[in-house]
Image: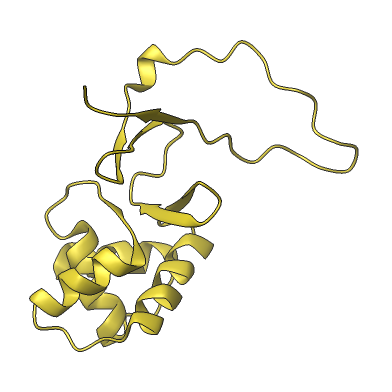
Length: 133
């Protein structure tokens, strides 16, 4: 709980019971996570936490809004939430619908198009789709 509380404090979020319990599940052991709202909801249930799926969605959105997590959209409809916030690519495992980090040092982007007038590029998401053979 202590690591989760510090994580919330760093972003200036009020440490509600639900936020603290979800933060503990996400960063309590110091490991980076890729979760969907549904998978985090199941983890919370397994941990005995009383939280609704809507609260999980709202909490993940709040964590993203303050920069604690990034949302990675796969297929335009499936969102994963990543506790690792530096720029890095991902592998999307088509056979298991799992998102994992890909080696950052092996990705080389040689150029990006200019942003449209009046806009700036805020982030580039690279999702490499793979399947086991």
